[in-house]
Image (tube, rainbow, N blue to C red; front, side, top):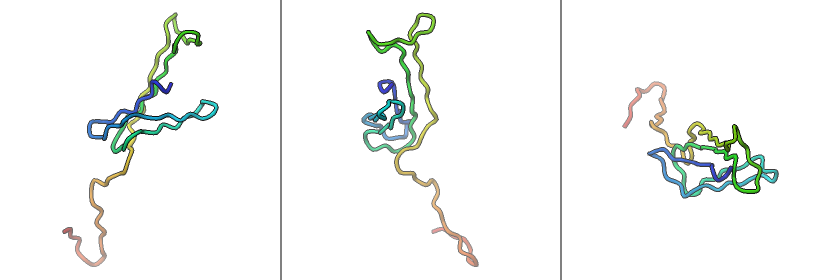
Length: 98
């Protein structure tokens, strides 16, 4: 599945040099590590290919190889930036910003 895993930046996010996928010993879980300096929103897409080559078991439906992908909700990577400054309000004094 690692060949069909994508981490796509949105138009305002920093592009990545790629991803590295570190699998658990039993191959049931993985850690996806972005290569570069991610900053912004990214869409993670996991793909599944039912036929990966000769002499390997193939998953088919109606005689055709099964292919599926699932894009996940956007995720934010990198430092988070506040959109509005937080100004503490002091009791007894009028609130002003400078």
